[in-house]
Amino acid sequence: MLTGGNVADCIAAETLLKRLPPDALVVVGDKGYDSNAVRTQVKGLGAFPNIPPRKNRKRRIFWCRDFYQNRNAIERMFGRLKDFRRIATRYDRRADVFLSAVALAATVCYWL
Image (cartoon, rainbow, N blue to C red; front, side, top):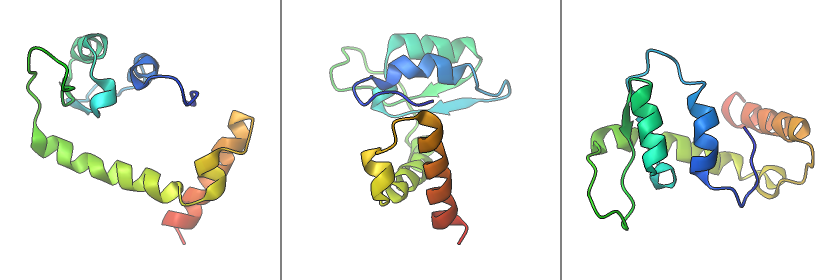
């Protein structure tokens, strides 16, 4: 799902969570997904929301650091894709052309 740079992460979370496999046990997200609506939706799907709370939360919420440590692989993947100038600056106006550029960059990074 492609959104604008000014759109909050938790806005797109509702659509992304609809694609969650039914046997998912834990959903890992960063602080951008820390909202009560996202946590309620994840719990409604039968999974545990492992999202660290933002600093401005009045009541601390439990999250497991061990599960969260594996998330850095995703961050490294995005960082590696952004080494390609076309991906980092998003020259393409159409979403399908941008997706094909991401697929080509991923092929170069991870397959060759």
